[in-house]
Image 1: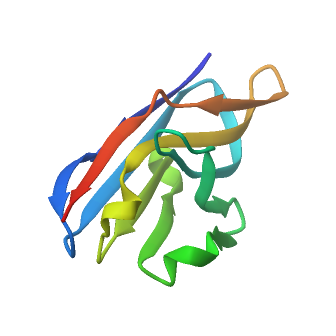
Image 2: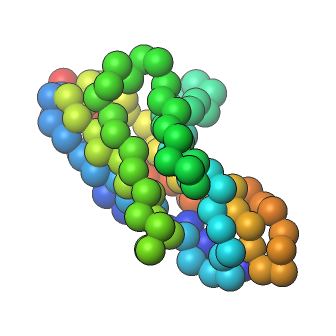
Image 3: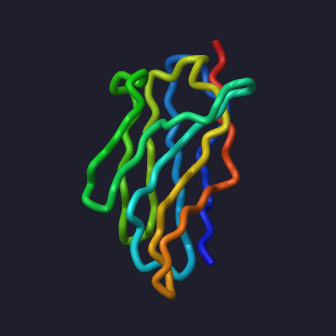
Length: 120
């Protein structure tokens, strides 16, 4: 009923920038929380950043202000600007959304992931 479509991943050199986007489609009433998680080989999936319907943001401490997340409610889209990228930022980035959908059900959805590779 709800699908998350991710875009913007790719290969970039250290110090460069990428912008990730995730659009939710389907019978959506409201998106409570939307954001990004990432997973590198051999590591657990970890929080990158989230933003609530009220605009409250939450970032991983290690990002030190390099990433900025934002919402476009008209398009049910979350964007994340990633600056000053480091090789340790390499991983599969997954979009996540907690959604109120028709017929009034709260559910969690995940995108299938987009690869971000930062070369040194």
